[in-house]
Length: 296
Image 1: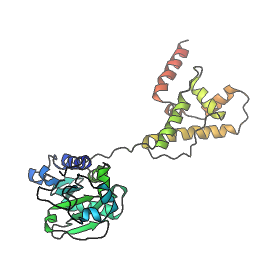
Image 2: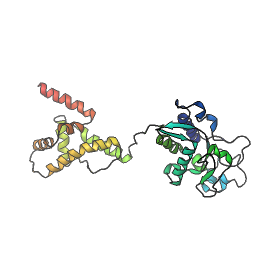
Image 3: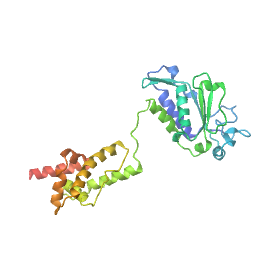
Image 4: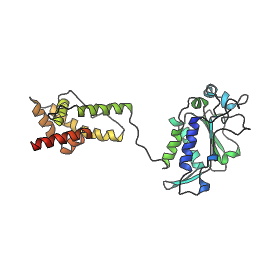
């Protein structure tokens, strides 16, 4: 029999978590569990709320797209969202504003909308409209004055592709979910690993000086022009830029011994810049070494 797939249950749970628990709203403005549906009732035949056991001959939710034909299983591929009202960020948000926001994202072809086939909704509670990615239809029945219907291409449901990003982005946009710091890209992870390696390969004699010596000698090099988007990495990058500037200046001078290179590098940096370039795990080693020398 037709079943509710895990990825749409995750969307349902996300919406209920954030639109059903706001203490600043009265209860009848909450999004209730019975207002977020996936599987059609026992009499429902045909359409995206039905799996393979309930589709009908020439069912539009199967025959109009190869994505639907190849993805047909017992899973339903639709989500209905009922009425709600929430105040957040100094503004009121409800089913109409939620629906029009989602449609606007689809029209813009945002990456997290590309598994959506259609949205049947009302922008004002008076007229029903339909956004259809395939351009086949533009309206729906009057029940969509008080609920919005989302259809997903069946192949995305069959693949159990995560469908929460669009809805999480909406909840973040209106302020119900705190903006998360973006994950580092693989390239940024590799860059940070390189920085860490350059700053932690120590020989114990003069940790800071040995690091800068190797970089000045051209054995290690961090390109200050490398651009990253992650906030933490941008902070590290700004600290290393000052270091690289000093190293570039030193490269034009003629030093004949290692100690002169070390002295020259350190002379071009403030104590704050030196401290900022040292990872916390190394800083303690430096402090302990300095304390040992001062006590000697």
